[in-house]
Length: 147
Image (cartoon, rainbow, N blue to C red; front, side, top):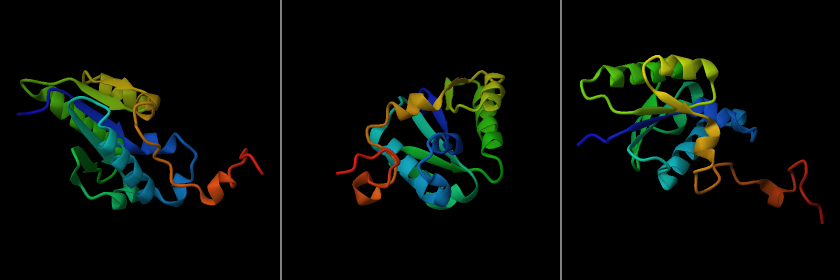
């Protein structure tokens, strides 16, 4: 039986929303995000994460602990719109939510009947922090307390 709803995560937008050094390891950042979503299962229904570019190397396409990982051949935004349009064209279309803070993407998916939520909606529901471990007990952070 098909899940009653679909949540699609714009991984590039979610990962890029936090300046934690993701640009040094896009594949690792994508892997941490997908693993965090798989641990938390923050949404009802099916959850899909769309990866693009170098991030695709972090997680193979397919199912990871209940999270569907989709590799975009080119633009992740274009692939998300394709998925939303395909869902909307089904005779028994299910509600689709896209997690992104990208205004243009939000407008594009809304044209196909999907709703969107900002990145904070996902970040606030993840049970664990998906940032990489900090070295030196966090002493390398700009505002870390120094003993």
